[in-house]
Image (cartoon, rainbow, N blue to C red; front, top):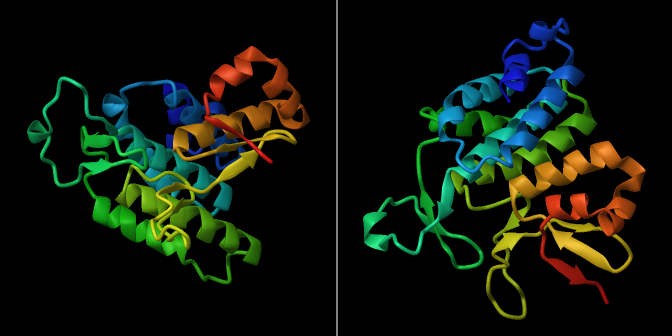
Length: 232
């Protein structure tokens, strides 16, 4: 992870690829993938956040989005479920929340000291209107950074989190609404940033063979421990 972070911090200069957007994107993506396997990222968070926040100012939309997704992952990782031997009264932080499963989620540490500035930067990207940015990139930035900003403000909310009301029950959907079709009969819900990081990594590597490997390769299915719902 240190190697990939150094690439991000130096804009690729550390590997003789200065200002090569594709190289910085690759480093951000691989850092994020490795981070999904680390249980406690507190010690790594400060340096990583400084680098990722800096990349939000990149002129490359791909770099900005990859950095934003890593930021969302770091916020998600700062919350963990209340342990069985912990008393709720011992964790009275006003920012503690419940996830969509009703589990008590506890904020374990601060991710970034200048969160107000970060939220402002994310707001700008979620609403960018500059004509210097292509229409396609503006649309992509709007969609991605609306989700990223939402997760920074409420870290238990994953990508495509919805607060819309179910018309039949009157209740909020209360979770991520991103669903990915794996094959003709199965789709999975991507309700966590770590799941999205792993899914994207497998797609990058396996490309057109993703579905086959998901069905046949146990190593792939272990990487994606998603709850699966059969489609009718």
